[in-house]
Length: 211
Image 1 (cartoon, helix red, strand yellow):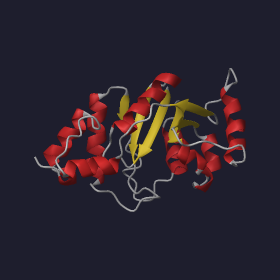
Image 2 (cartoon, helix red, strand yellow; image 1 turned 60 degrees about the horizontal axis):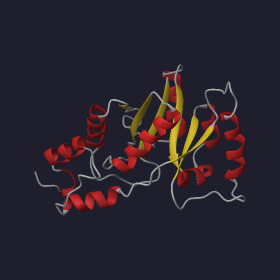
Image 3 (cartoon, helix red, strand yellow; image 1 turned 180 degrees about the vertical axis):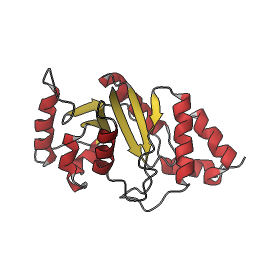
Image 4 (cartoon, helix red, strand yellow; image 1 turned 135 degrees about the vertical axis):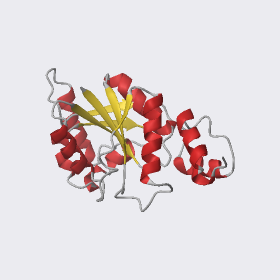
């Protein structure tokens, strides 16, 4: 199976995460998208709700959208969620799958700062979601990486890892910070959050919401 992986804090999970992932699934004809909540994100200090709550919201979304599946491998880990560690474990557990790791162009531009980033190409394909405002200049060191690894995707019998797919996605106006603020003020978040997430937040009074 061809599996897309979308990792993130998901605090909360919203359409700014989900719609680009679904667009990638359609464009690359992936079988499933796995939502992978982080437990201890390497670049963030903390979250606003518990790991259990973020897992429950992700599971609720998966129940609402059948093409999505929850992957709890990082949430159950007590150490930092380095991508290469996670993908190594997933490849060992699911050797038959072909993994596509989703990231924004902003993350790709900083990929060389990631822990053991070169090893990612032995474990998965990268899917770079191109957002407005982020470009890759000819002088950027990742330009060479992009050219080399993108060539793999043009081969008819391409390997199961090592490619880079650049996918144009529809810009989404949502951010977790703004959503949390709107919830605490009692403002509508209907356009930003799936129904299942809204219900969970209300039931558990998260982010200062009123039941």
